[in-house]
Image 1 (cartoon, rainbow, N blue to C red):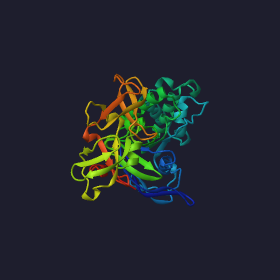
Image 2 (tube, rainbow, N blue to C red):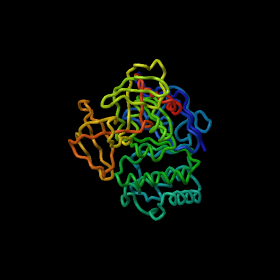
Image 3 (cartoon, one colour):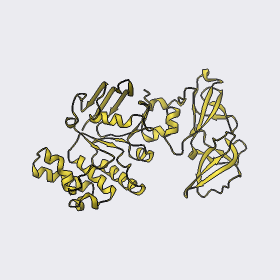
Image 4 (cartoon, rainbow, N blue to C red):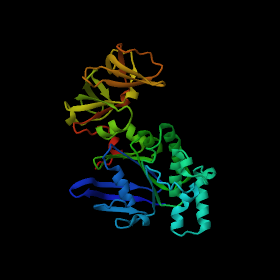
Length: 371
């Protein structure tokens, strides 16, 4: 079991700073996922934990030991990369056992650990097979098995499913989830750009932007209570609809005006100083529903419809050039391009953000730890 603690961790290449004072506490047994746009520093942060990148500021602790100057091989970590990096001339068994053989481990111990890991990953029947005779998903499981046999304190995954096709991604994601269940005391840190992976695998998600932590929380905390506009639009697919608006009445129940609808009461408290302030008004596409009310949030012609089977994405012209409102409706909803549609949402599903992009929701800051 191993806690991982980062205190003001920085990484720079000369004058180019990549990580800006990262503070993060990861408890033993947690499954933590780093997400963020390309170039946000998530892989650099993972490689810094592994020791593959030398941090230029702050402290990094694993299991209570400061490891700033400890080489990767001595940190008690195992890393799984995008590429499988298997030896093509070696069997599955030999690929998994190779590291232990180099370390001159006892033969009986090597055999026990390899077969134990193979059982967990459903590779027992494939131990004599060469990598070329396996699917991409099976090869990735071998790479994970090679990490398991080392009995690491911490597992690090750097976008391990990015080279797989859609079907294999789903199957291997399930395997990783089952692996975590079978190893409840093992700390796992996972980097991905795939929201589905993050939402389904993580105990907590760390959202990064430009080398800083924007928010940390459980998947549903981030989804329901984004701390700022960036998190609101990054978590969730399609992205949250964001419209300009104004606070018409501040207080325990805030009244806002916004493009496309009437004044709307939102059950979010705002201070008196917010009266008359420009804000951003947000609603997720999946929280919108067809309404017959004259006071519905939005009304306009349907500009385009994407029928996806179970659901359909409806793009509605509410008077914003090149920025239609997006609604995710049931696939069975009878809608037709060009028709006028009214859309509404429950007050509790609405979001408002101040001029700096911070959420007004009282509960959001509790889940956030802004850099």
